Amino acid sequence: MAVSWIWLTLIAFIATSLLHRLVTSNNKKKRLPPGPKGLPILGHLHLLGKNPHQDLHRIAQKHGPIMYMRFGLVPNVIVSSPKAAELFLKTHDLIFASRPPHQAAKYLSWDQRNLSFGAYGPYWRNMRKLCTLELLSNLKISCFQTMRREELGIFIESLKQAARDGIPVDLSAKVSSLTAEMSCRMVFGKKYEDKDIDERGFKTVIQEGMKLAAVPNLGDYFPFLGILDIQGLTRKMKALSKVYDDFFEKVINEHVRDWDHGEQTKDIVDTMMSIMQSGQTREFQFDRRHVKAIMLDMLAGSMDTAASSVEWILSELLRNPTTMKKVQKELEEVVGLERMVEESDIDQLEYLDMVVKETFRLHPVAPLLIPHYAMEDCTVNGYDIPKASRIIINTHAIGRDPDAWSEPEKFIPERFVGSEIDVRGQHFQLLPFGSGRRGCPGMQLGLIQVRLIVSQLVHCFDWRLPNGVLPKELDMAEEFGLVVNRANHLMAIPTFRLQN
Ligand code: HEM
Image (cartoon, rainbow, N blue to C red):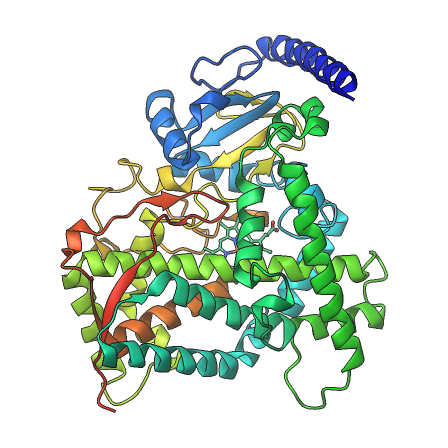
């Protein structure tokens, strides 16, 4: 056994060295974008630490907004300014509209059958159309309004108890449970208990998938090392995919069993099952594997992103009490102190909208978007971009670009007064949802959830930090994943402020 491992390692090493020579000699003839000096074989992997979005921002300040870096055998182009982002996501969008093949896509998305990791092509285009028109349309989103109101009501009641007791609340954990419950009801039609999926619980299992999909995986960068699974990631991914698969099978079986809902709102699984049975997807295959892959997309897309956005907005409001007071004042004017916020109020909350934008600028929750992939050789801004490069759009850096933003490190929502800049992918200096063909299809739902939860929390309660921590002392450390959360949970003490 030991001997076969030695042979495997030796073969992997020789194959990697040969491929490395081939890649670098091919690239010598090209005019690649500038970048830091790399190491043989490893390339620039050693320059990435715990928070790659911050590391890449720092390196780009030296080497420019379009930068070439090699991670193992894989060429990467790092994009760090609004103008450069426009070239990749608008001017040449079609060429870069695919996703790279990688281990997480293989094991965690039923072999790239989902939307987020799916390669560009007829299958992905059809799936995307189906999701946009059937699952995430404005009509579908408004069907779930009553459910959102109910969940938010339960959530606020639980916080009122903490307010009566005058004790700190773990806002990170609470908000993440709330978005998980909203997502479950929207996708599955009901809440499940944590133990129904795995002893680790629902949120942990979904978050683990997001972390595994973002961790630099040597198997992706040195394909010959994949079989050795030195980091043990493939083993973890296979185990996790079995957990997902067993649970989603159970959900589908329950839906088949309880098929006749009468007038009840159709959840997302119901809608997908109807599509599967109607045969309306004749031009592409749509079976249980696709239903499961899309289920994971909808859950992963809606749970952590919204929770983390709310977490960062509240953190900034707690650090900036004057801004918090201004948001509360706007809510008093629009809603009054006699009732809670309704979804129909949200469009009138202009200052809140600026706070949301400013937080997305400083804390985009998916700071490197999801990697894009060059489907063919292409020239951008005079540089050769080799086919099969991964394109990494660093929105963390773009939001801090001093040519696009004055005093970029400061939290100033007022910078948006009279400005046309929006978050919907038309303004490349602010791209929390990406842009172009691969832009987020759940943006409308995400924005509703985030604005609704933040406005309700700030309208119903005054908040202060526990243990005498001063606003400016609140730590803002980040923990990297496909979605970047706070490294330390946000704790705060609520005081109820409505008149009933
Ligand atoms: C505040 C909430 C949200 C934020 C900040 C967010 C952000 C993003 C970002 C940055 C991307 C990658 C874009 C790119 O690679 O160019 C993305 C893709 C995606 N998002 Fe969202 N998202 C949110 C909510 C949602 C919701 C609610 C859903 C669905 C229920 C969703 C489903 C997806 C899917 C399926 C993709 C992959 C699209 C594709 O590759 O074609 N997202 N999102």
